[in-house]
Image 1: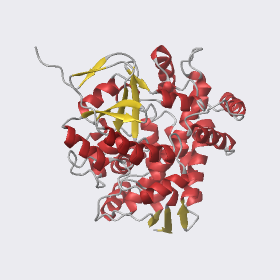
Image 2 (image 1 turned 90 degrees about the vertical axis):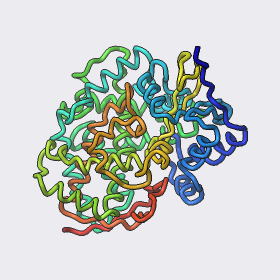
Image 3 (image 1 turned 120 degrees about the vertical axis):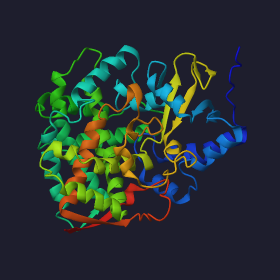
Image 4 (image 1 turned 180 degrees about the vertical axis):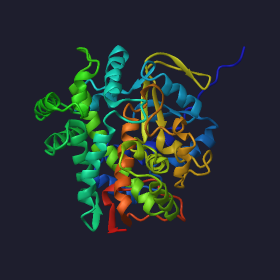
Length: 439
């Protein structure tokens, strides 16, 4: 009978170092929405912000792709093995569900969201999200209408000679509001309220019901009920809904995923493209080969789409996936007890130099070769809980970049990127600035 594998536990010292150098900085940067001050501070001070070097040393020292480590007071399991990661994500959320801290924090601004649901409630809400977002389809049924919104909003950006993060954030706010609630919707009161709730959630504790909560959801309900069918909110009435679904509680996730997360990823993609001349040339040649007047034409820009995926790989906006086991299981041949917290370190796995010779380079062409289903790369997750809006998000980002680059050139002013050096582990989007000129 084969011996049962044993997962090593790292020393108390290594746990302390991990918490001080990585867990606390990650907490201060923002669990749910980025904190500008702390992002800038750790960008300057932290020597190994993605824990790449530290975790690599742990793997070598303990000779294992599975390591128990204490995160604050909780013993947690680091899973570095792609097969183990696949097992965890393929069995989420039935065996590996989102952890207590995430559920508590997200419940403050989106209770009953699919991302923190379990069991039949998760399956019900997942069906609803997949229906509205057209999950698994190359193009959303209203992609051409969304493209029209994107093209209209990006024209305003191109009237300026400079593009800063505040301008970029405003652009994505306007796109988000109109894609979700209908063309012409510009009042961003709901987005600002959502961000305030998310900033409160960053604390992770002392989260009593916010005084803004009821007004925020009243606003969501009114907008959903009056939204045209060509918007995501308008499609809610055509999606499968039960009393478990809670449609209004699903919408905030779409809002921050577009207005915040997608905005950051798309801006970083533009920074990468404009700092790599051969990539920019490839983008322009690809765009020149087609008329970009339809959603299908934008979807055909696989290299430009790969630039977005590569920005997500290099700087994942979700640096760590945290799960907890709902029952006993096995990983790497070893038993894992019910209630174990499991960590998948995107920030490490995406930049693991020992496994990836391209770890710190910008290589968008790899996403044209099928790496999007590689369980090492989980910026949009994989498995049962893969991002329901993955295709829509990538389409929107590609469409924004295509519209901007079709008629103008952008020069990155800051933060600078040197293609001759390994790309940094952090990239502070708050400092982004480009100059703009017509072609």
